[in-house]
Length: 181
Image 1 (cartoon, rainbow, N blue to C red):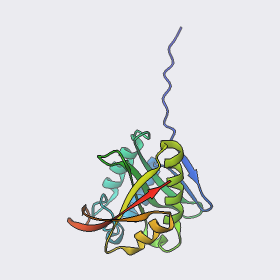
Image 2 (image 1 turned 120 degrees about the horizontal axis):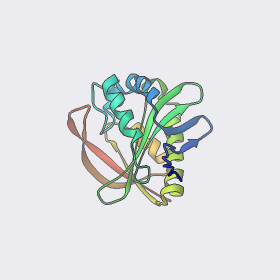
Image 3 (image 1 turned 135 degrees about the horizontal axis):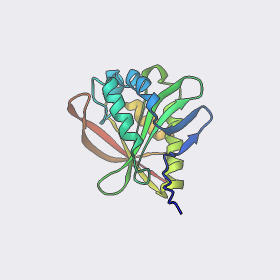
């Protein structure tokens, strides 16, 4: 009798009208580096450093491929025709509440992709993580991200936090929001 070890590298795949959200794969490093190397993209997030090159992209993909999807999720946002257009991340805060972060590469701004991806991510959180509350924030100098979150159903809490932006190398006023299922 032999023992069989079964491992699973399966990650969720979410489909919308124009997008597919999926776990990162090795081939994503190049497109990820091209999109995230733009300071106007990285500077609107807390977690993307600048510069963001191939080495950083490969490290990010390797890390994402090893995630425990029961506690943290990182989706590549892929357009059906254009390929990788951005990323969506869900991670538990110290209080256990999931926090959502999303960015879209500059060539794909103002097309509704971020709103479409955030809505899909929220449905997944409610269904798979069984969470009915998600927090998010946007830098005060980036109202477009606030509009995306409002369109997806988030509400302002009135809280403003200082959040560190790795790309900017400084703390930035961040307007906090909440989504309630």
